[in-house]
Amino acid sequence: MSDIEHAETTAPESIAEGVEVELTVEKLAHGGQGLGRMGGMVVFVDRGLPGQRVRAVVERRKKRHAEARTVALLSEPDSPAEPFCAHFGACGGCLWQDLDMAAQRAWKKRFVEESYAKIGGLEDVLVEECVASPESTFYRNKMEFAFGTHPDEGIALGLFRRGSHEVLSIVECHLQSPRTAEIVGFVRDFCRRGTVEVYDSETNRGYWRFCNLRVNERGEFQVNIITADNKSYASVVRKLAESLMKAFPEAASVVHSIRRHKSAVALGEKVVAEYGALKLPMQLGPLELEVSPNGFFQPNTHGAIVLYDIVAGMAGLTGKELVWDVFCGSGGLGLAIASGPESAPARRLVGFEMSREAVRDARSNAERLERSPDWAMPKDGAEFRAGDVRKMLFKERELADIAVVDPPRAGLPREIAEALAESGPDRIVYVSCNPATQARDLGLMQMNYRVERAVPVDLFPHTPHVECAALLVRR
Image (cartoon, rainbow, N blue to C red; front, side, top):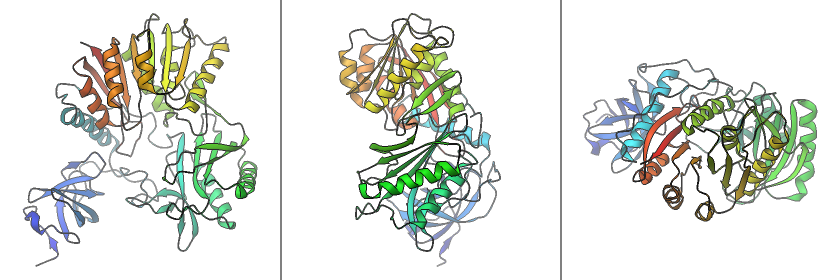
């Protein structure tokens, strides 16, 4: 029997690991993979696009589906585009460069629709068209690059290879800034010339872990070098910072953070040194915020302005409302919709957040805006609180008229979703970067609220990820 199965009518039993198959991709799955079928079995195909016929090798066979890697593209997809990066195909950063932008947004809208219907039981919600990002390249203000090792090159610094934990040393990147790859290359070359090794989570040895870059609208960079906790190498980071700031005048600051936890998460647990300003000023239209090196700020600046305008329209503030900003981060969303350059759209703003560092940023931002003669804050003030969000919501004596919610990808813990539903704001605007967890949470609240609007926003062009703002109105 041939090791290539040509027909989609192949019996599922014959689809085994290592076998090559030919099939036509029908649609895109939520993780960005293509989806085809053989003999009734679903096959997820890496690098497969709708309408495209591919030859793929089966790498994993599960009970109800198989996972395959494309080895040959046999026909064009329905909506092709020309990739623009030399690393496309190898790099895991932009999976959809070969898919037309309009098709990308159409599939993202469909992801939201399917999640709402299948996970949240919200079949009757009309999801609006996915709103385009103002830019489709060089749109990110923050990038996270990982250190790794290469058998021939030594230290690697870049993005993970597609479907792998191996680090690909990039020489170009079209996501953040034309200068990004140059800065990454400088850091990589500096580390290669030294004797300090890359951190290995299995042995808990080594030092270099991540290099995060954040850039603002003025083109100023903050470089956050994240290492293991080893004070004997601190002078090496200081030398790197000095060399980097001398070579790149736009590098406004270099920060040294440490991470003790073994998990491969590009988040520093503690800042141990800073060279230049600790916080980088970030602009959101007329609003300027300062963000700590390990704090959260929407990664697509111009896309965030579009998103926040949509949220403000959904909130419909008149100047009389108490607004809750749940999972407020550094205060960007709440301050963007509840304060303004001429008049404050809200009476009072209260933010709730688990991260104490983020709340310090939010308070600092609110205090700076309060002192500005060109900015109007809510007349009854803006305050931000750190701690257990569920407990804080239950203890609140003055209930919100409007709540805006922007949780992490994991969504709302069930008890927080229930606390919000029971507290009864007239409207809740729920912003999420994960349609699946958003749909789950909206389903939990549908006894008390109906979803009146859902607007996907393409904050992450060339990837399967999508942001979505949903307006919930109390029944």
